[in-house]
Image 1 (cartoon, helix red, strand yellow):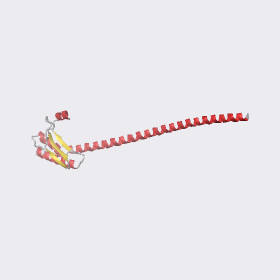
Image 2 (tube, rainbow, N blue to C red):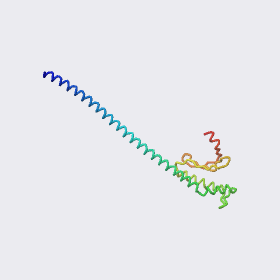
Image 3 (spheres, rainbow, N blue to C red):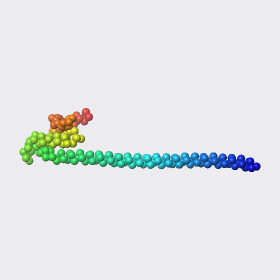
Image 4 (spheres, rainbow, N blue to C red):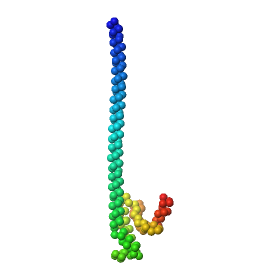
Length: 165
């Protein structure tokens, strides 16, 4: 009888051990699954945060650059030749305020444009396009390789550009 008890105890122990191993395996799988899920959620959260920060940084840089360009345009617009050209154009090519000719104002603005482009490497070209029927260029200054040149004005036909662009 003791042999039967011992045999049944061994069988019971094997069964318990098998059940314990199955439960331990299930527990390990669950813990690993939860741990992996937690790692995935943390990685996604950190990646999303990094992307948000990167996007905010890029937006700030773009806004800063736009403000810089707006300030540059405001500077150029406020130079005396701009208002002088308008006055001279409206008064038979002679500025009634000080007697300066349209050509003199044009040369002064070309000089300002050349200096501006030479000192702002991101600017390749500055132009004044007249608001007339032809859309003619009044002034064009552009970077060409290492030099900055005043280019002979041409007709800038906006309608033709829209068709060919």
